[in-house]
Image (cartoon, rainbow, N blue to C red; front, side, top):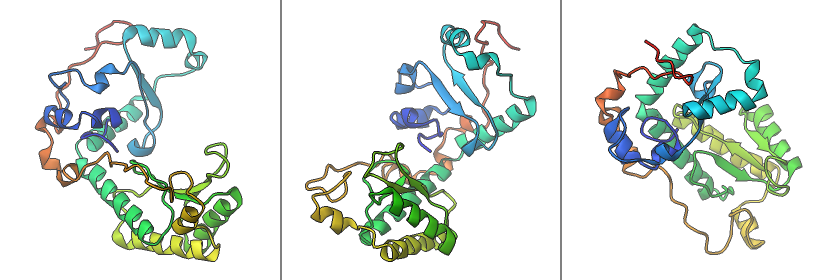
Length: 256
């Protein structure tokens, strides 16, 4: 969801350098170079199963020695790895998906703010709507599902502190305007039906969790307007048909 190739926030923070170099390394040390361990899941966005840890040979040997769960872990089947490889290449070469998600997120956040629905300020793709207690958060989630066929999770303690319960919405790149407007209208009705506090209500109480506070700090989006104007044609061609030299294994054996 972040970075020109979807490698995450660390890549995103050196966006221009990684955009220009593609899968090659930029000509200076980036934030990614400062990270000792890179971990990830192959589920969700990649649509397969499993996960990985990438690090130096010494770090991987340390994990082998001190992570009991590793003893009972087997290598992922070749079919899974082939599917994962294809998924990674698709994600890496499609910046427009990441851009479309960010545009949808902006649209939803702005629409909720116009309706006075309390969006907890944040720079990410998550749209958290402040409710303020667990019972109402669950009622709102249940009502959205039962009445409007929209599944939105209620986030309660211990994931968030008591009194900061919320609904958490994550628009996708492929949610159409019609579907998005249906979500916005349905949430607005749920806030009315359950008499949930809106922005002005929190503001009158002095604000809470960044909602309705006096002189709020401006939060800049990680995706700038300039970034949102990019297309897949702006990617380095080496992303599309990558030629990757085989790395050696953590045991030091080179694979051919």
